[in-house]
View 1: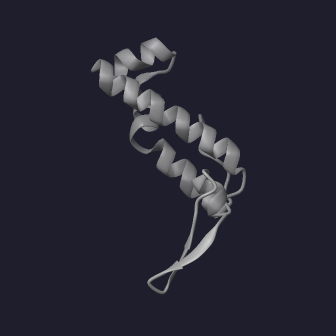
View 2: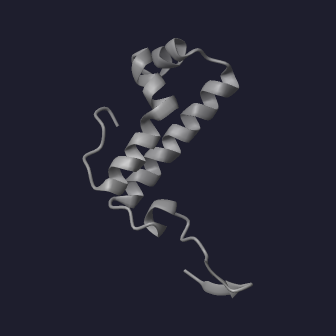
Length: 90
């Protein structure tokens, strides 16, 4: 990553993987999972789907869709950063 100083602040260009830049273990896998969650969330919003309908379309129960859309990514990131096992169903 390229480093430079701007107005006395050290700036590093990203590698393109935020998780790797932070030194999170298994960064590539986490990047892929987060990308998938982002795309599913965009599709659900674009199509105006309720969580139940989204779940039917992707083969998940509504509570799992809710967890994925609302909090699963946050939990996954926190668990990875803390070195803990990932939450079930990720």
